[in-house]
Image 1 (tube, one colour):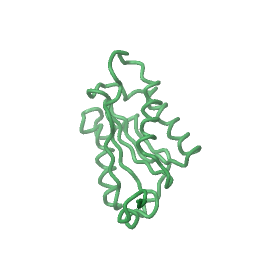
Image 2 (cartoon, one colour; image 1 turned 180 degrees about the horizontal axis):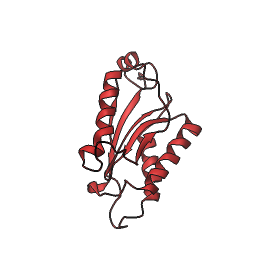
Image 3 (cartoon, helix red, strand yellow; image 1 turned 90 degrees about the vertical axis):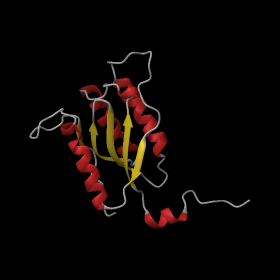
Image 4 (cartoon, one colour; image 1 turned 45 degrees about the horizontal axis):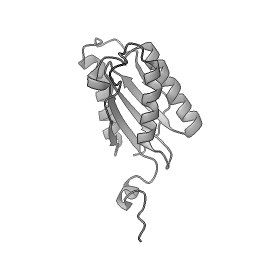
Amino acid sequence: MKRYPRTPPRLEWIFPDSPVFFITFCAYRRHRLLANRAVHLAFQRFALSAYRDYNVAVERYVIMPDHIHLFVCGPDDFLLGRWIGALKQALAKAITNHSARSPIWQRGFFDHILRSNESYSEKWEYVRDNPKRAGLISNGEEWPYAGEIVAIEHDL
């Protein structure tokens, strides 16, 4: 029986080290549960712990009322799906404005591997401007549920 590599060889040529992922995941039926101080603090605690304990770096992020955008990079053995599941569990504990009868999270998540600095810049600009496009802030204001946990080198 022939064994196959963990990732296809062509991806190893493009991404020799741990890639940076652009992630989006949503609240169930886009319920507006997320943009609050408790969820923001839980997100920051989880991200700092992930970096300290597992070398998983969350860079920039924006927590919208019904979804979250973030950039993350982990070591070679990083299991993205398992990590997102743990993040969702941690945030669920901080969500207090929710009916226990319905799920908190939409199943799954969207992930995109960033391939160039231009791609990162474009994605970050989109993410950063999300609260303004949604009418949650005006031009000069900063969204209080956004930030950066760990700077990731972008030599993509």
